[in-house]
Length: 178
Image: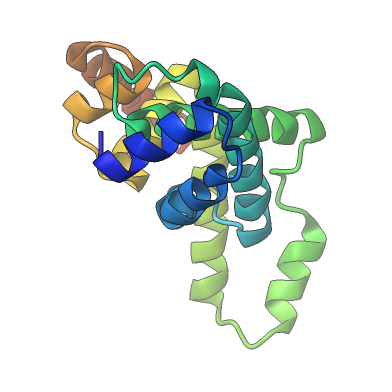
């Protein structure tokens, strides 16, 4: 663990709760970028990021340091993203409505752009519909560029399990996108 972060965590555990502000400042960029690459929406990114840091604040006293702070925070971010996707599934937000297509057609976007947006939306819906573990592996591998070893560490699974989940996810996505 980085010495600065380690010292901040120790101060936090001793009662200096204001030091958490600096932990947020030091980590908000990579957390936001990670979330944005998964949800593709700035407002959702801000909301999820805030939820993740609130969760981290309340759990930081329990952080034992067996893994790096960043790995620990990745897990919290993934939980927040998963919670976001559960909410979206409940509301059926991922349906591409006719009004969205009409809006695209009325703007200066050409047909190829409309098709590409539709395909991105279709792919996003397919990824969201994956089983939790498969979705997590795909998001970390494809959107974050992590190795299977890193994914295993973040998700607390073996490297081989990460590979298997990724393979199963690819197979499932091929079926859904045909």
